[in-house]
Amino acid sequence: MLKSTGMVRKTDELGRVVIPIEIRRTMNIETKDPLEIYTSGEYIVLQKYQPACIFCGEAGEIINYQGKNICKICLVELASDTNVVCINRTVSFW
Image 1 (cartoon, helix red, strand yellow):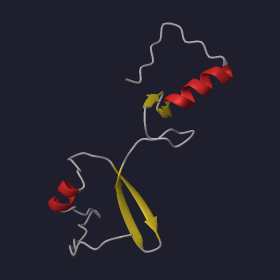
Image 2 (cartoon, helix red, strand yellow):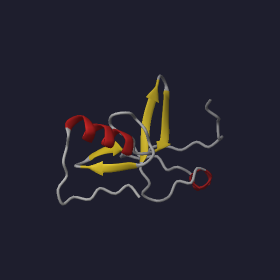
Image 3 (cartoon, rainbow, N blue to C red):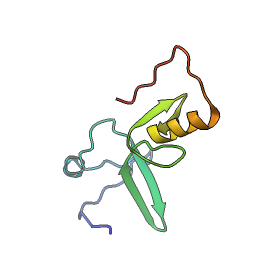
Image 4 (cartoon, rainbow, N blue to C red):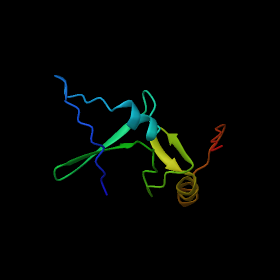
C-alpha cells in the first residue's frame, strides 16, 4: 500500500526528481545506489535495486558470471545438467 509523505517535488528540464534526504535516510538510500523503476497505471514506484538470479529470481547468494546474475543453487544445477567442467577457474560465493 502506498503512503503519502506530503512532499511534492518538480521535475527539472532533464526529467530528474530529487528524493528528499529524509526519505533517503529512512529508506537507507546512499549516493549512487541503483534504483529500479516500476509503473502501474498512474503510479511510478522506485525501489532499491537488488540483483536477482536470471533463472529463478532469487536475490540471495548471487554471483555475476559473464554479465549475468546467477544464484548458487542454479549454478550448481546448471553445472550438473550440462556436465560443465571448470579448469583453472575459481568461483566463490563467499
